[in-house]
Amino acid sequence: MLRYPLIALLAAGHMAIVTTGIFQINTSRIPVLGPMLDYYGSITGAKASYGFFAPEITGQGGVEFEVIDGAGHTKIVPLMSATNHEVEVRAADTVEQIAGMFMTAITDPAEVNNPKTQALLHSLAASLCGTVMGNHPNAHEVVFRLRIFTPISMSDYRKGLRSHWETVYEARFRREPPSFHPGGEI
Image 1 (cartoon, one colour):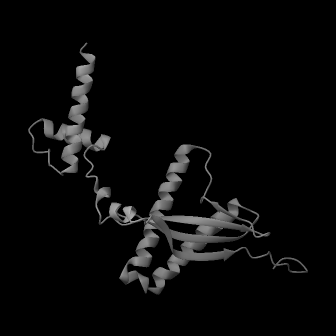
Image 2 (cartoon, one colour):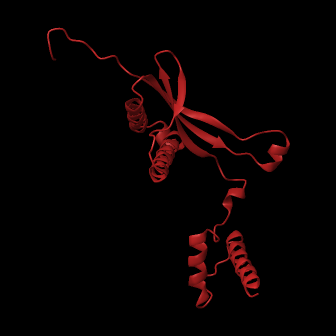
Image 3 (cartoon, one colour):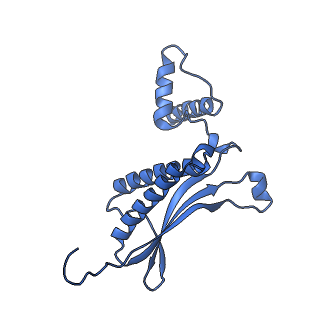
């Protein structure tokens, strides 16, 4: 009989902590309970500020690899195919960090016109595409795309607009045929 009221009380307490997160109320000053509430809120996500509802939130970046074989067939592939979920999660996190670095390089006014930054950007894209080519031996070309997902507001949605992915950087890398040197090694 005590079970349902206890569950209801715990749910109400959780929602109270969610509310403190939404309104950014500092609970750490509450004697004794403050640090415990903060800890609980941080491990459960209940203290998140839910800023993704804010209109000033910008899009999220991502990378895409398009493999093109000798016959012209195309396929979108991940940077690496993993055999278990944990490796997939770590690889996705790495790709997300790389996308963030690319976004800085193409949007920061100090970096956009910096030849060293742009050369580094191109070299990193080439290296990533080399990894993709290594995973796809039939690939003749790999297209690297940095894309940003552009969210829209609810009022724009009501007007018929839709969120979309936009390509902000693209580079193509071709597999060079092996060179043949008659008479032996180079």
